[in-house]
Image 1 (cartoon, helix red, strand yellow):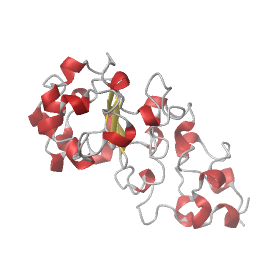
Image 2 (cartoon, rainbow, N blue to C red; image 1 turned 30 degrees about the vertical axis):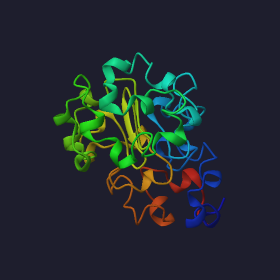
Image 3 (cartoon, helix red, strand yellow; image 1 turned 90 degrees about the vertical axis):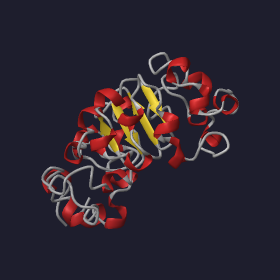
Length: 250
């Protein structure tokens, strides 16, 4: 198509018009929403998620490996996974949340009840070091961090201390054996530690919000937030694609 048809700001990064053509650019160079990381050749299920597709079994993991949206944190799926941590190893009921709210199949981890104050705790309260992470074999409280320090990469924890178990998740945070993710941030354990090592282009991103994060790529690798989706900046990025590879100039 012509530049003007392909590159308008308002339409540029829509799934249907941007990357339905798999030959337009390589998978590692492609940056958009829900269709970006569904390509199994680009990343494995366990290495990727987007806000919109994060908890859908078809896009992220199979139902047996994870669970569907409505089953997201059900007791039977969540705490019985031997690769994650057993119920007794994870933490005591009194440390995690009251036993009637925590371990009851029907109340504990349905999506709608999961993050409510009365059933568990709010998102901002969920990951407090005093209530969530007292399990010493996972990471000590002092290593874990306070709420305000939670997402600072230097103080978070080492990759070996954090991603030691196969499944760990909250509504705003999710970790597999080799990955950790929040809605606005995504990284693999090998590149979690510093902003500059935060992520490479080919290792994952969320949809519309993910590629507007300055922490995701350096300015030279991608662009700043304000420059993110302008056609003049985006299509001249040599790391993304050349004009001759994807379109002709109008």
